[in-house]
Image (cartoon, rainbow, N blue to C red; front, side):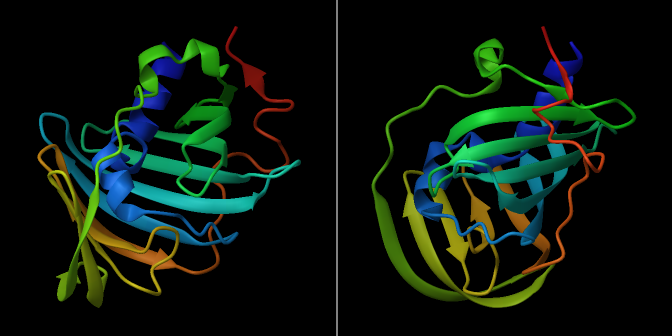
Length: 201
């Protein structure tokens, strides 16, 4: 149950992990260590969440660590630490999760079941040109793309995906803050979160 709560809290608000239309419109990610972004995500029927995504050091043997920390309007706070491969972060090799006040748990991927959405067909991406867009983090000259019903505004200088704003039938995303460096883990220091942390059996 703890693992399910943590995965839900950390990932359900993060549309980037579960919405193929948005992922297609975003394209590749540039996970420079220390880069971070923070978004307000409004999901239909699921309420609002603040989500911070931080790129950490590369993992042994390639790939990189990505942390997703979420605070939901319900008060549930959780985080997931993922070892991922691929520019879109879709190949998850290891996962640790944590609910505020609890010890991290490494989650065997075969135990996740529906927590990780089943892949769907990738929609065609249309480039719609450029536009000026203003969000909580400031004003940006953005490139606009659409995939199926999802529209995405991206700007150079915003780390990771370049995502400034996104809208689809299911959710909206707005950039609150970002930094090219200084991102830190919310997990306890000195642990590999997957090599020495507790595991869900």
